[in-house]
Image 1 (cartoon, one colour):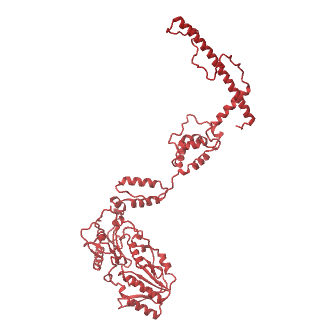
Image 2 (cartoon, helix red, strand yellow):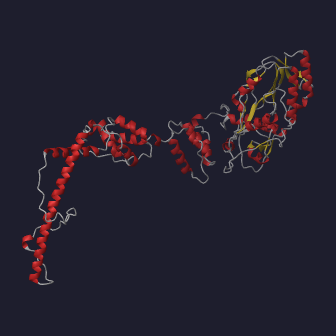
Image 3 (cartoon, rainbow, N blue to C red):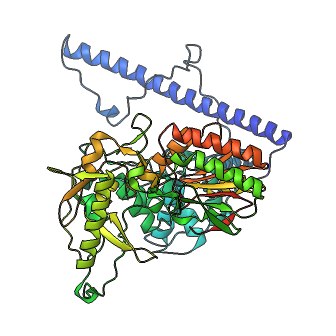
Length: 576
């Protein structure tokens, strides 16, 4: 509708004033007639009372029956107008009729409360159409979920764009409906435009997109039943888009409290009859106990070794010899030989030569959950060769003082015999159960790249390796009996830190950082039990070696002469 000019507005105002005057005249005329009729009735009533006597019943004259007496005097009629003859009636002209029609049209437009264009609002809905009968949206929840529910429901009846627009307001309520009614007229010309405005308005109501990191903070509370925890975990996992099943299972096992269910989930798959083969032909492999990086950070890394030709130099005799580089000058080689003989007490040729690090310096503790229940594994049968090899390994450890005979133990694990690349046997302990209820030690472990980069570019280097490195650290007295393992002849518990325990690598790296504090980065690079002494001059290299020996002598740590190399030029990657 076009806007009215100032002249049209003036004419409309005058016409309204004339209409109001006409209405006032009619009201006064009606009031005057009612007043006259009321006076006639009062006179007739008085006359009837006189005839019937005081207190008699009043009778309404028959000539006035059927007349209306409910209209009270109009308060607008003053005393001055009473008795005045009624105003003369005038007819409304054609102009007043047109103005009244225009006023009706303006009132209809002013009550318009939808933003649709005429092409949408003029299209009628299908017959017997029912509105959106699901939960209506109030603007406080996810707008995407509401739009998905609306389009899914409407797709069962129609795909017409106009109908989708017309019915959409019936799915709103509260603040959302108020927002819709306040949209500008003619601002919605299609359902796509409506969806864009709706999502823009309520974008802040969208929940944040979750990732698998949200599962890290979920833990089974004390006293919480397994069913309640699984329901809570599943609800969170379902809200993460494209979550891998393996990742979800890993986080769930981590969040569960120790118990039979956790152990059952961690148990490896049992072999079926089809997988069975005679024991003599069946290969032996290490069962997955924990991640290798929790046991030994070097498990997947290359170790440094000398690239030049080496030679063995006897210190006391041929059995007590050392490996040195061949590029040193004769005088330097002789000085290196004397320095090694001077510090021969730093090397261990047998386990009995290794006293171990003092418990006052460091011990390995097991961080077991308080709620964890001790588990005694069912005894596993070994083959004849494996049983004999396990007995020999146990005797060696017992004679070296690494283990002791255990009695009345609660934790008990099997041994697994693995063949080394050189054909010898290696005895591992299946600490899967106890490792699964230990928290991870987050002590920062160095990267092998730091060792390589730190050693690169130096003229003189020496490569050192501790003798049975992990076994030089004692177990905490309260945790010794938890390391008990079984053999064919007896049960034993470790006096020292075994390789197979979780967080053993972190404990050893903590010791190395403590011993070589002030030397790392300047003269020494350390990666777990790999130690590289570096420098550019031979004289300074001897001083650095003396500092290293002095630091290790203070904690009674010994080197393995079979794996140490002194006085070499350069270094590279290789497998030890």
